[in-house]
Image (tube, one colour):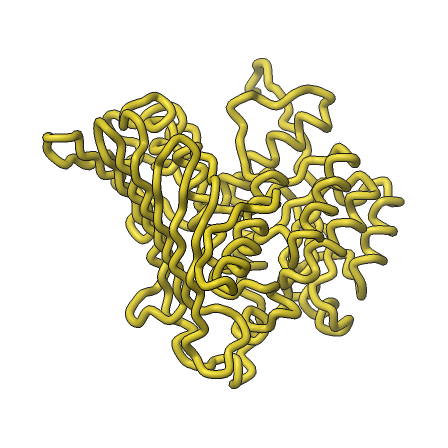
Amino acid sequence: MAITGAHVARAPRIRLGMVGGGRDAFIGAVHRIAARLDDQYELVAGCFSADAEKSLASAADLGVGRAYASFAEMAAREARLKDGIEAVAIVTPNHLHAPVAMQFLKRGIHVICDKPLTHSLAEAKKLARAAEASGVVFALTHNYTGYPMVRQAKAMVAAGDLGDIRLVQVEYPQDWLSEPLEASGQKQADWRTDPARSGAGGSTGDIGTHAYNLARFVTGLTLEELSADLQAFVPGRRVDDNAHVMLRFAGGARGMLWCSQVAAGCENGLRLRVFGTKAGIEWAQEDPNYLWITPLGGQRSRMTRGGGGAGPDAARMTRIPPGHPEGYLEGFANIYAEAARAILARRAGTSPDPAVTFPGLAEGVEGVAFVDACVRSSARNAAWVKLNL
């Protein structure tokens, strides 16, 4: 029996390329899962390693038909193909973000880049100018802003549910670099502790930028100046592995940020607390489906992802009913999904829904400026400094 009726054809998947993320890489696999979760992208090409042989082997592992020995060759050829990539995911060490992005930007290919935006502040500003001139969609994977209850927290702050914001406390402790793991040749530790590849910030660039971005995203507050005390506790380490940062926001709010990769017993303890004149809220990345709310003089209560009280901002980031945990991969996928909506709108010659939001160039430049300010402040005995935006 035939089935009849009106059907609307879905838009063809976005043809995606990837630079980096080959064998032995961590974040590349996360990006690939995130890109596929909502079935909006198809990975069709890649330069998965600076080692040509490894790039080809990684492509074979992934079933990707077009593999390249260099990202410059990939950008040039893909731009000429009728079915070339529409967007590229950049998942390399930090020092390669800008040179890779530049190759694709000048050919009008959309960019989805891992954070931080670049290796240095001067490079970040140059890249931002190039991206704005090219007119492409540029997304930065500050993935924690994709969690439903983070969106809920942002909406509550914007609605005035907390009153005037007074205090912001954000922390991101880990322990994986408590020992000199880089000396063992471990790939992730090796490049993340090498200032030539990571940039001037260690923990500040790797996870401090996430903490700072989360605080700014939820509160909407503008940072006026900061005072940072950075440490490299592991002997011989060339970048910070722990940081305490005091924050002064416009309007009088104050904050503190702690990031560490030498905090024994901590895995990925990203936590945000925001206190206003009416109420306080708390969210923890390791238990992300809950947002805790405490009115001044009232009882602490728990709001659940997809549960009662959660609004539309959280709902559009939610895939499954409450009680079924959503976490890191889903939050990451939400950034890819939002970028896809913007890319598909460009393809159709229309504007994306105003509700579509994802981190981009402004957040990227500010993140690198945050690291730069932390390093400058600490070098001057925790002097108060402004961001060089």
